[in-house]
Image (cartoon, rainbow, N blue to C red; front, side):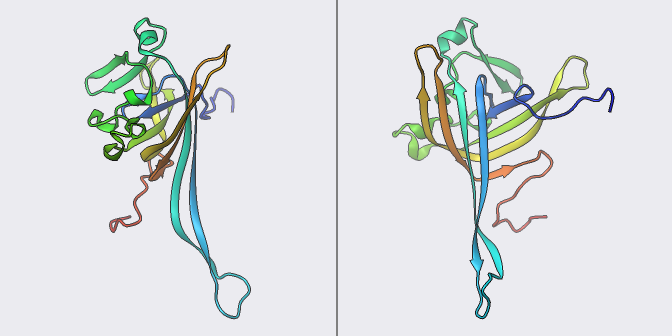
Length: 194
């Protein structure tokens, strides 16, 4: 239709948060939900009667273009932390060891990579938002698109070359994935599912 704008989710309109921290210079995020099923067989039939679910897994990967606290302090790069009182600028760089978990208390998202803190490390939520025009002219609102809940990093690697920049790649597991802001998925053991 004439005059209507498409609302596709693109890298230009997406925003990624880990816990309370907006990820600056995140290159890509991918996620996958897998439901493992087993075939139920019966005597006297060659085909299975049904494929029943027995497990639910959420995995994903994330790549981040790294910058340091020195680059952040000089104004070359910055990342914003959303706080109850507004927005503040973090000057600590963007390593996962600096990212606070949800609620901004306890450890960091990268504590699982420290053998000393591994056993007491906490989970984090990873959320993808779409920037949409807000009710105030010139101001963008954010709409939650995907929320990966109770994530833990499982691997971390990096690569750099002579003419390139340092990019770190991460893999993670999550417990649940909300694929829509309006639909909250529940744990299978919850009795009060509606």
